[in-house]
Image 1: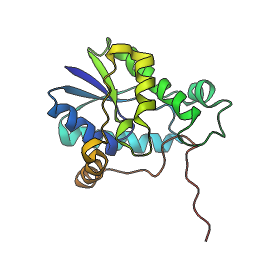
Image 2: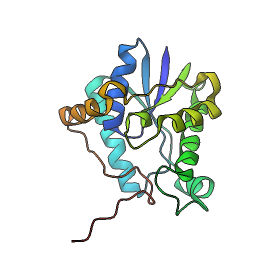
Image 3: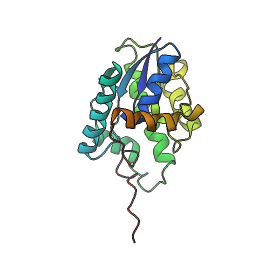
Image 4: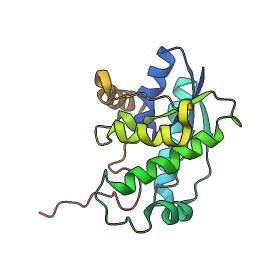
Length: 179
């Protein structure tokens, strides 16, 4: 089955891509991340995803970012929410909706997301968002199972992929600890 893999970044997508292939699917890396700021960070993450695609002979589809729309529809009024809270749930729906809306155009039967490989994301929240926007076409896979996150770290090293230290939006940037 041709499956869009909403890919937040190359390192996270690495394990997910291979896991989907091992399950007999044909994954397409779908880079839809209007949340990522600044634009230089977006470009670094996209470059890492393309590097992964080159190393694994995977297809990449880039959904043009619209950070202004993301700020308006997702973040407005939720800027001060803690990481993993309501803003993140809104962000999941925003990005996964874009994947769901692209299925037919890209000839895919289902979609899933690399977000669940992260130990910082509650898979249940991601699954809820995916089902809400995609119904039965959302494939709920908890990629962090069976050491998926550790595998993604090893693959990122193997492929020399850039690994970021924050989720993506300006509200998730971790502040340096003062010494």
